[in-house]
Image 1: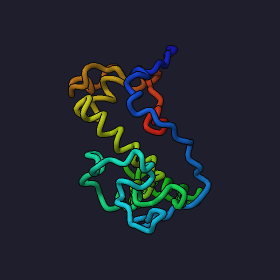
Image 2: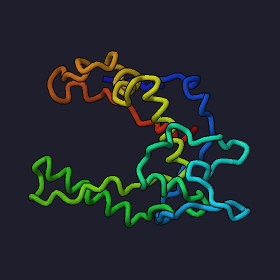
Image 3: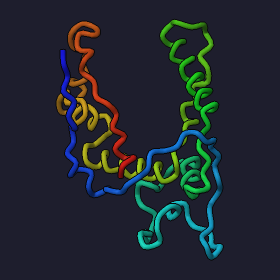
Image 4: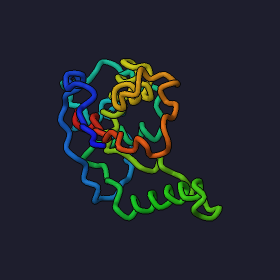
Length: 186
């Protein structure tokens, strides 16, 4: 069964966040820096780092309030000082996470690994855009799940009934949607 893949959300939906972002280079390692300083040596709050001074908001944006310490540390790092995760570390994280999946599926021993998917990190400016995009999705649709079910999968209105299985296993396996990672192009 052929599947035609079309964008499920119009481009206009995302124009209010239209900021360009380069694809990440995953060849380097990742470390976190602590709060940065501007050219005058003054410390910047995490919510102003990687934002041009002419776009500084008067106060911390709502999507950056009440976030975890890890995200604050990442956001406090200028993009140019951020060290990306190296391929060796990425393979280690994936190996640990896949060990968990194999264990849960009954294809491995009782060793479930560490399941530390939170070890993956985004470039600070990517994280900021992701958090902004996530807040917009929740405000617009009520939840990420409802957005995915209604707009991306087009399985209905996003109610729990829309998630009930239909057909035999793999009967509708051609129905899939690629992750556009739209926040990366904002």
